Image (tube, rainbow, N blue to C red; front, side, top):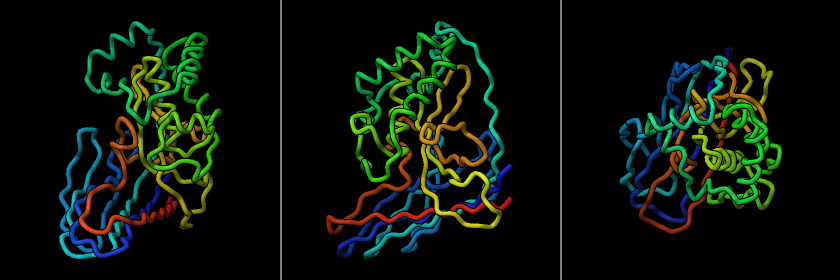
Length: 281
């Protein structure tokens, strides 16, 4: 079991004075399988009243408006979470049984449709189809596909932007966790396996010292349905364990972006982000 404290600072610096901004933040984890939230808090500067709700996909959202002039918007999300190793049940569904199961719930069907971010290039679709023929079950096929994506795409910070698509990263052969996850999600969906984009945090040091704060970042990984939802981190080629803190999931990054909104003021702004993760137990 890991007990992790996460401090996520983000926001915008504007070139001039902003008269008003309207925002949504998805930065606080929720209780989930293997995950217990002991404390979570979101502070906003300039001060603003917050309206909390859970969105369609089950992610915690803080909505807030800043209606006073400001040149900087800053958010600090702090969370203390206990994480236990997740169990991944073994399923031996046939493809026919999976297809029947998918039709029973809307959430499975919704995670089969591609988005502009996840649409896979033809070469990746072919790779996914080849992998299916060598797998004994949909679960085995899904794991093999996401592992293949992780092996193919190099993790290179700065090689893509927040607007890059799966096809962009595939062509470049490089990307960040967002791109690698989009590729994995798109490949799985092309194979008829429901898949979703998961956002959260990963403690980057497997054997971190207790009480030592480590520079981290927002992270993303993939989950697929093959009898139950199962996950894998293709960026690091590891299963989802007690270093992963889940915030939310959706069809792609657009459903779980940590901060988004609109504002009235100068056109240019600069995003800043810092994440510190501390192991406390």
